[in-house]
Length: 111
Length: 115
Image 1 (tube, each protein chain N blue to C red):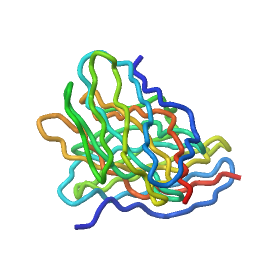
Image 2: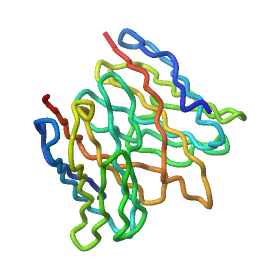
Image 3: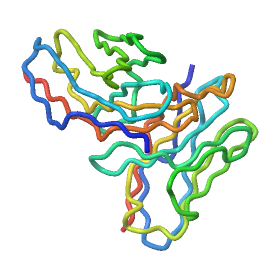
């Protein structure tokens, strides 16, 4: 069945470091891909999305490119801040309304 | 523009009881989906409502049921609560444009604890 796999955390970085969180997916067809962020005690916020191959989603300095050939959607940011500390979820939607999530990756940024 | 709202914020129940959670979608949205997020896990899809009907369902037992009202708001009902139902319940809303409800916006969630 369809699934999403994320790199295990926690990922611990110093402020201003470069961030990569790996995400790969298994799905037939051409799903839309998403990154959501969850701050402690809160719901999920949509961070960025891409709806077709080679699309790049971007928001608040975060970027991810939809790579069909490697079935990946890795999240990157050039310079992280302490306020970026949160749990990040990669997800796919095969246009059915059902989001399939990865297990989440915790990011801790230290000053 | 109000986002997705959910009530209550927290809820404590005992095994065997029944619970109702409520959700109001983002303004302009017509579709509501519900997810269960266990501690340390990603959200799991429960079901989705559109035009007051359940359109799609995940792998959850019949103890989980829902409803959508004419104003697009929704309820999630869980009967015969089990300890394993303790989780954060998330509501997400979207706009069903051409049958596509890809982009979903989430509410803050309801934390349910079953004792």
